[in-house]
Length: 294
Image (cartoon, rainbow, N blue to C red; front, side):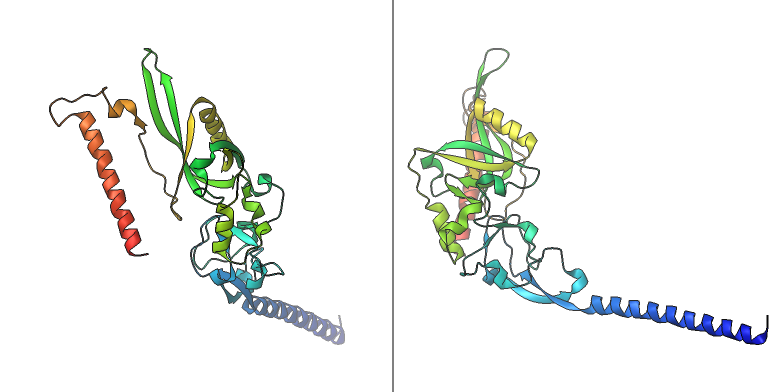
């Protein structure tokens, strides 16, 4: 191989290496430019509970690196409203302060048909028929409830028992009568308070109201069994309370004659009643404190 040919090969190899290096450097530059590019995203300014309407006042727009933008994140506060300025979304799950508002965590209000469009993935809607006086203006779609079942039954010895048990906790309410989470937009409201009032003031002509809740398939079996074999009641939770409590249930036997008194002013029956009274007093103190700081 002559010298000229060796020189040509060296030149071409150098050019090829230079091209490869330039391409690599250019790809790195593009990558870092893209990572450094900032894009707007809607961030929550406060905690937003599941079932709460979301308005532009609840959020702010911040610039973040593009690589941190979550899929389906809302990027303009105006996108939370319809073209006419009405509320468009309700939180499907709780949103923490400072969290990106993502479309997968929202209910599009007024879209879909009936309850089926707002049942969370993997869950089922179970409907319980309730007395209108028990739920009217108390229970609204988006509330979280505990479900209590009261049973009247006989044991193996033929003894009658009456007992109330909390069978499900922290269950989301999807619909109350004609008010469904997915149809709030029909009332055409621009504020969260007026939307909540509209939900609570839905008129029902019948003496009974269907209440639909979202549960897992296993919970659905338990709830349907309890509905058919006992009496069902809903207990509304405070906003933001997602704790699970260990409860022993209440029964007539615990309150009345089964235990009796071992001596005046003592015994399991009296102790049980005292414990109930103490719980009630603590609850009243909490309510007074709440009203004081409102």
